[in-house]
Image (cartoon, rainbow, N blue to C red; front, side, top):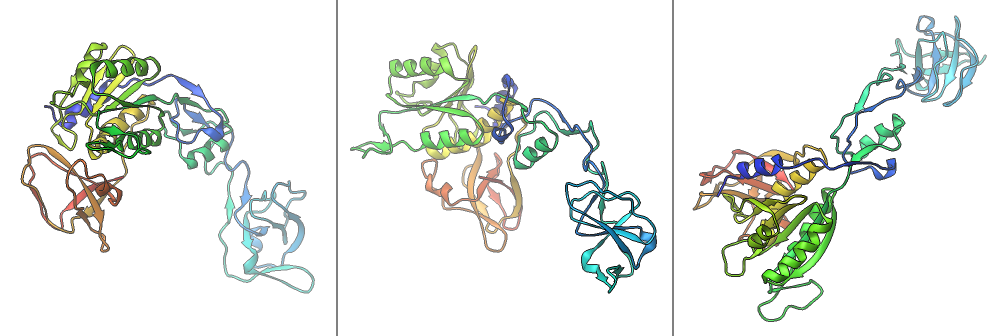
Length: 391
C-alpha cells in the first residue's frame, strides 16, 4: 500500500500528451491549447473614446468649444481638432487628431449658439490608447491553457479562428458485478442499480474526455477479458469499477495483467478508495476503481481527472477554499488519509456532513466540497482553517 501522494506521482509521471488537432473557434471551449497564441495587431488598434462625450484639447477647458463633427464608432474622423474646437464622439469611436481628452457628455452644457462648455473643474483623458492592452506580437495565451469563455474572446481578438488543441482522451467505462442492473431496471433480490457508472461518465465528460460506456460485465474472467480487449482497441484510458478488492470474484487486476497491462500499484493508503489499481499497457492506461460510488467519485476527482488533463497538456488545479471548521472533527482510525464530504454553514464556516461510508452517495449530493484529513490525524479542532476542495 502506497501513499496517495506516491500514487499520484506515479500516475502523473506516466501521462503523455496526446496528438494535437485544429478545431473551430466556436468548438474550442474546454479544450487545451498546444500552441502559443500571439496577437496580430495592437489592442486597442487606435486611440478610442472610453465614453460618449466630446474630444477636445485639455488646454481649452472649460470652453466654450465649437463642435466640428460627430464621430460614431466604426467611422474615421474627417477633421483635426484645433484651438477652441471639439468633436462629439461615441463610446469606442476613434479620437481625432489634435484632441488629448474626452469630456463626458454628462459634464457638459450647450449654450444658445450650440457651443459646448465643460461644467467641472477637471477631466481625466477618458481615452483608451492604442496598444495599451496588447502590442502586436505579444503572447496572449500559452500552451497548456484550458480554454474557458474568456480565452475564446482572446482567441477571437487575436484572429486565431482555428486553434491547435490536444485531442480529447478516449475513455472506456466498464462496470463489473453480478449484483448490478441498469438504472431503468427494477432490481431483484440481492441486486442494486449501477450508479457509479453514470457518475464516472459524467465526471470524465466534465474533464473533456470522449466517453464510451461498455455496460455491466459479469464477474467472470472470460466476460471481463472480452470487454477489456474490446475497450483497449479503441480507447486511451480504461476505467473499470468493481472487482479490485480481495474477494473471490475480484478478478479485474488479474485480467489487466493477462492483457499486458503492467500494474504499478493496487492499494492506496486512502479512504475511500483503498483498492484503487493503476496499470499501463503498450497503448492504454487502465484504472481499476472500487465499486462503491463515493470511492469512485473521490478517486476520479483526485486521481483520474488530473491525469486526463495531463494527457491534454494541462496542469489541473482543483478549485478550493480555506474555511474555518465550524465543529471539531474526530475519527477513531487514522491509518489512511481520509476524504470527507463537507457542507458550508451560514456563518461562513464548514462542517462534515453525516456520512455513513463509501456507499453513501447521497451524502455527496448535498456537499459543497471534500476535506482531506491527513494520515495520522484523528482530531481537527473547531476554528481551524481547512482546505476544502470544491466539487
